[in-house]
Image (cartoon, rainbow, N blue to C red; front, side, top):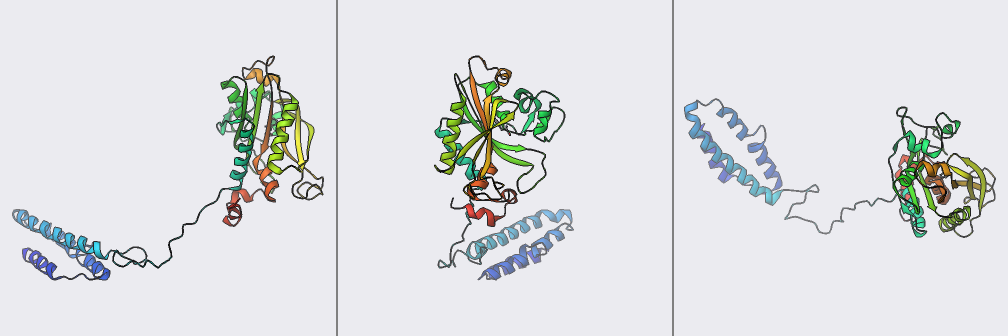
Length: 338
Ligand code: PHE
C-alpha cells in the first residue's frame, strides 16, 4: 500500500491538466466515489493497527496533494453553465434577460383606490381574515339567528369563528381602538361560500371605508363617493343612489355608475340597463357605534364597501372574474404598462 501511495504521488507530478475535460477526468480518476483515493481509504481499513499511524500520515499527504492539484486546476478551467471559464468569456454574447414581472390588475386597482382616498384624508387599516362572530356579525347589528346573516354565505370554522365575509370587521376593530374623528379605508380579502362563476368567486377583495365625526351627514357620504368615482372613472361617469338595506347602516343605499363598457347604451355586463352597481353604503347605525364604544349622541358617521374585482372588471373590460385568479401570464402581461 505504501508503494501505491508513493506511485500516486509520483504520477501526480507528471499529470497534466490542460482543459476542463482533463480536469473532469482527473476528478473521476482520483477524487470521485469510485476513484483511486476512495479505493485507498477502503483498503486502509484492512491495514493492521500497528501500521496505521505511518500509512495514515502518508495517505493524508497524498490526499492533500491531490486535492491541491485539483483546486489549482479548477481555478483555471472550471466552467459555468454556458461552458465559459474565467479565461474564456465571450463578451459578445447577449446578456441573460431576466423577465420582469408586472403588478396584478387587482393590485393596480387597489393602489389607485387607496391613493384616491388618501387624497381625501383617509388612512388605511387592516385586520385578520379569520374573525370571530362578534367582529364580523354581532357588533354590526346582525343579531344571533337573524336572517340577515344569510345575506352572506359564510365559511364557518366553528360556531364562533369564520372567514370574514366583509372587511366591515376591520371597521369594528378600528372603532373599538380609536376615538373619533375617524377616517379610514380597509382593503382586504374576504370569503363567501358562493358557486364560482364569471361573476362570483368563493373569495374576493374589498375596500370598505368609514368616516365618523361630529355632524357627518349623508351629504358628506355622497360628496366623498362622487369625488371617488370621478377620480377613478373620469368626469363623464354618471352616478345614482338606490335605497337598500344593510343591518349596520340606516339609511342604506347602493351606488350605481353608468356602465363603463357600453357607456350606458346597454350590454351584457350591465344587463342592458346602462347601470352597474359598484358599492353599498349608508349612515352607520347608532347601535353599531354604541356597540363599539362610540357615543352616538355626539358622533355620526358613514360607511361604504366595494369589491375590487368589480371595479377592475369595469375599468379594464374584463369579462370573467375567474381570470384574476388563474394567473395565466398571457392575461397578466396585458397590465405590465398600466
Ligand atoms: N359590508 C357590505 C358588504 O360586504 C358593504 C357595505 C359596507 C355596505 C359599508 C354598507 C356600508 O356587502
